[in-house]
Length: 498
Image (cartoon, rainbow, N blue to C red; front, side):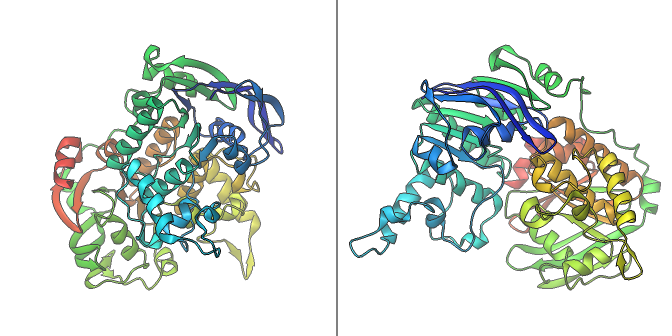
């Protein structure tokens, strides 16, 4: 099945998201769409999937006019979309989430759902994509990568002829990514038409036959992946040459000075729930401490304990030398502990609120008892310029922003409180290479100014490129310590994680 779009346009108020984009998706091929955050990738996919209606332009499906009124309408025609953001309802079961809008297909004579049949069908789809998830799992306890696998299974449950994947690997660890890429290759071999958006060019080059580059909402060109080099892709995406390494240089190591830098956070023999066991670590002012590990290895539980989200089973914490026992996330923020969560939409911001409101949310400025809007606007304006957030104004709704710019808003919210400790959970998830370089520069700059940072990431080059020291976590324990992260290799780290 061939899906063609010609000269698509889409604007949101004064913001021109897509301008003159054309693309052709052909059977048995994987077509990647790449570009910086805000380039129009997600908007293009949403128009192809019926989630958005173009302001102008035409689309055809196998030569016939194609103008789906909704995502459901597109699915009935064989076009299925997996969104960038998590859309799982945690109050429903795994199987119910997969067949959410088609539960009646499992209804028996009396109208009751045949749960055994539904769960068997759901399990078969999960196994098809290599997801290690049981339909009996509690959805509320699954991690983000597992939730994303359920969304992919939901899309495949409609037996689509065309599958649109918008950053579907952003929440997955290395093993899950490889499983999804294998599924994409298998589906291509079965003749399916696939569009694939990813900020990781290694993934794009591994599975895509062709790629279309967008810049500032405009069509740049379509290329065979075998005929264009990664550096050329980067250049056409961002319109400038990128440095050989996107990671800022580390400051020269001075053991004497490092020993004099005050310890900001000290953790002694800490255990949290069943996820974390007898962890001890410290992080000093001006240092970036990296945490490596597979999902469930303990990093998120550690962050939750530091933020006051989970109580300690035993052990103790000190913040700048004093006893630290946060009773809630609010308490932690007030103590100067900022946290960038892994799920920005559900935990990091309120999408219906403005950019300004989200940036100052953690510590709103007041003039006496009254919210000081002028001060808030000044803070927001400074952060927008400093981090490079692309927004029409400080009053623009966060719903109008691309995924990468939403991530920058959450980073800005963390920096707005001028923290002394910053916890970063996958800080560049869903962010393009140009924006990642900007975020890395800011992180390194803040560390140079004395901010203590703990970085947890599923991106191994990011951990090695940004950390000063590294701890490897496995099943809730520290299994390896690397005192000089620059000397680490991916092979060495993965060996200790597995």
